[in-house]
Length: 144
Figure 1 (cartoon, rainbow, N blue to C red):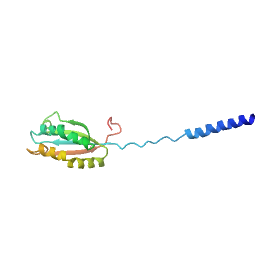
Figure 2 (figure 1 turned 180 degrees about the vertical axis):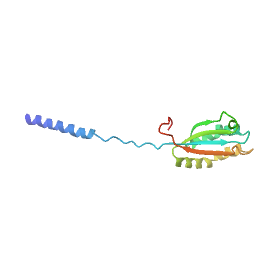
Figure 3 (figure 1 turned 90 degrees about the vertical axis):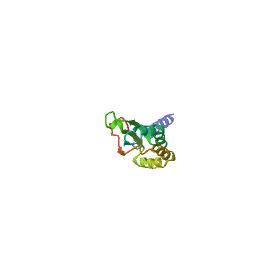
Figure 4 (figure 1 turned 30 degrees about the vertical axis):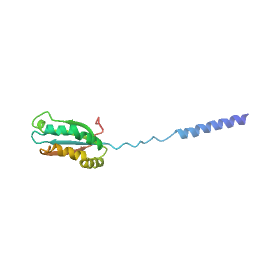
């Protein structure tokens, strides 16, 4: 009986030890998703063309951005003159800088974009200047 109890006790202790080893593990290092990159774009229009540019974004461009994995963060027009009459500012989020290049290339070749651009610019270009700045969210930014 003593051998049985001792054997059971040994098995119990071994079980705890093996279980303890099995349950003890190193902290899991989770792979972090690559941080998105943001693109701040500023468009300057010829005099009187801002409404046409906004219409093109509203009616065509944003839908095509979505199609090409270019996520709209927001669109703004300045409140103060002289920029309020000829400037559109927007921010896109891209999975990476490389993805941004790939997505822009595909967007520019999209037949729906080619048509929308041509149709909207039948009376002349809607932009005189396009600026693009890629930025990274800081570690203290509420948006990442």
